[in-house]
Length: 484
Image 1 (cartoon, rainbow, N blue to C red):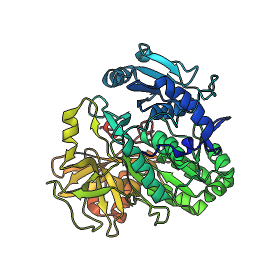
Image 2 (cartoon, rainbow, N blue to C red; image 1 turned 90 degrees about the vertical axis):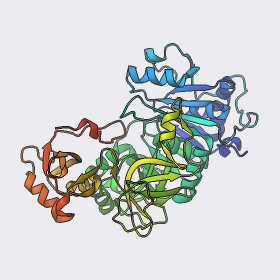
Image 3 (cartoon, helix red, strand yellow; image 1 turned 90 degrees about the horizontal axis):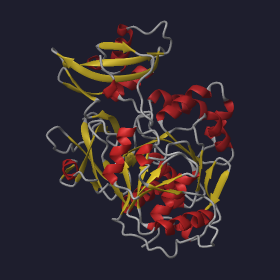
Image 4 (cartoon, one colour; image 1 turned 135 degrees about the vertical axis):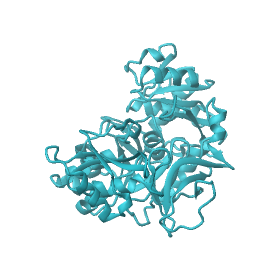
């Protein structure tokens, strides 16, 4: 079987990882991770305290080389969540950056420091001696956000990693010459699998900023980085800064690919970035359970408000409320996205009932609602549970209303939800962070603005004003925290 990281096996001298002032080539990473892999051989499952550090990246690579399943742990998890993850996944030890303090929930586990230093015994690179596990062998167990109960551990096999990363190679024309820069957390799909393992599989390089700031983006893109990965919150900050930062605009203009994910990037920010830089941000769509499903291609049309077309090897369909496939791509019919392909997880750990409920005839039920344009482009309108509003006999996606509200000059942030209404079934509620709190736009002004851009039945019937929207670590709005 072919290796997960060919450039490590080939001992490439190209840079692989850079965190702060520390850089490892692929050959040096092979030595450091190979030495640690020997220590891990025979372990069944290890937790990784996933700080944004070089040790985290080395530890994950080492475990994958050894064929040991990785459980990335969010360092910002609360005690109850940590205790659940440890009890549920039962790791035998925890890997951590040297010197990083661990919480009590991990105290019972043996600790091994994941160091980037070359081994002292000269027995480093193990890439040629460790057997490549089966494609179906579990590579990672990534825990979901747990909005309706304790987080569930999605078991991701090695073939899901390779299928997604190789499909993105095709869609993004990703090569060993690319240098990626990002500041994403390393405990989830976006930052760890795409942002660290992706460059390593391609034989390229990644620079992690540690913490996001526009100065770091400018510096790295001006110094040879070709790709930027971010979430909408990061791109919003970029859009806000561009008017007064010509160096940032120039740096972004020179990038080969700007990618946004983990939540929808508002159309307003798409337009501001494109106007200032001449570059359009590419969006893609994935989940913990499916890795990547769709993307705007590097050689395709970067259409704001869409997540592109299905990736190579991914089958995607929309189904109506009765579960019947929606055959026509008419740009109007809303349905739930269902997918199947080699990119999917195998199960929720210790949750056979939840695993069975997640599938219909081999199709994974994402819970995301979307519209598909005649040319196949997918436009996500929201989550089935929180973003599909049934009002006055219409099915309305919250996302398109949010995009229109964000185009109003008096609106800084916006979220849309539905709440029970005796006449309409559900009324549309807009949650607004005003651009000028002292003079917020009126309810009528916002309703007229939406009705003028969309349709009258999509206008908000109620407006509530906030100082900030509740968001999680990835910048996603936590709509379940919004209530009257």
